[in-house]
Structures are given as structure tokens and as C-alpha cells.
Image (cartoon, rainbow, N blue to C red; front, top):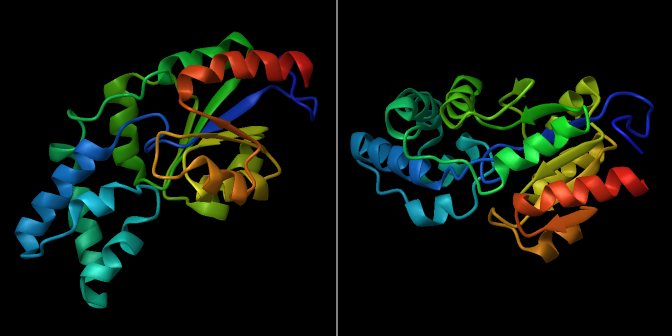
Length: 211
């Protein structure tokens, strides 16, 4: 197989953002602390940053009254650019993983649950070479975007990323840089588990050569 995917079109590879392409923990922690200071809430920051991926409203729900969640989400997003961009770096191997897709003539699509403008700030800050960004989609909701963009592979770190890939009929590749174990990812149905994105270029070369 070359840059043509199994469906006969151009290779398109989707990637999750948080904890797949970028290490969001430092910035997310700083925003939670700032938000908690404003609201007078002592968020369990370590617990919340240990398993990033679910939408923010679900993460905050156990710690706030129901009518306070939507305003808190809005305030979190407003605080985010000043607290969470400069401290967040690309994951080791992220640039090389995207370059591997390019070498095969492919397109790179980032599909993330993160608020789109803030996701774009991260992409610009770390210089990720991306063709299309789609934000505010999570779990199986990612499937619509992956199908629309023609992605045959989706790379993520969370079992909800696996759900999105499978619902789209894409091959699910998982990395162990988020909060999920290999067993959790395999139990969710992922096809491939890599320790980190540094292993992705060799895997992609082999997959396209033998698929």
C-alpha cells in the first residue's frame, strides 16, 4: 500500500490533541488553579489532570453546582490562553509522526474535544503541521468528522478515542502517553498500542507496506 488508503483515496490520518500530540497537563493544571481561585473551589487538580480527554463540563460536574458548570466552562476557556499555551509542549515524536504522514503524501487531521480556538493556539505555538482542525468533538462524536475527512487511521491516547475511530470504521492506533493503560485500550477495541508517537513512523511505514 502506498499513500492510497484501503478505500482507494489519499491517505488521511487523524490525531487526537491532548496527551497525544501535546502534553496538556501543565497548562490545564494552571487554568484549573486560576479558575478555582476565582470561584473559591479547591479542585482536585492532580486527579483531574491524570485522565485528560473527557469534555470539560463532565470533568467539572462533580465539583460544581449544575447551574455553575456552564459559566465555569466559559471562564475556563477565557482564562486558557493566558495560562495554558506557553507551558505546553509537543509530545516527543509528535512532529516526526506528522512528517511520516507527509512522506506518504497524506493529510493530517486533528480531531479533539478541546475548544477549537484554544486548540489552534496550541497548534500554532508548537508548530504542528496540520491540514484540518476540528474541535469540540468527543468519543463517538469524532466519527462523523473522521468519515467526512476520509481518515483511515485515528491516533489517540484514550479509550474514547478508540470508540471514535471504531465508529468511523478507521484503524485505531493508541499511544500510552495519556491516562489509559494498554489493557484498557485493547479492551476498548484498539487495533494497535504504541508506547509513544516516536514509534509511529516505523509502524506507519510497515502498515502501508504490508497492508
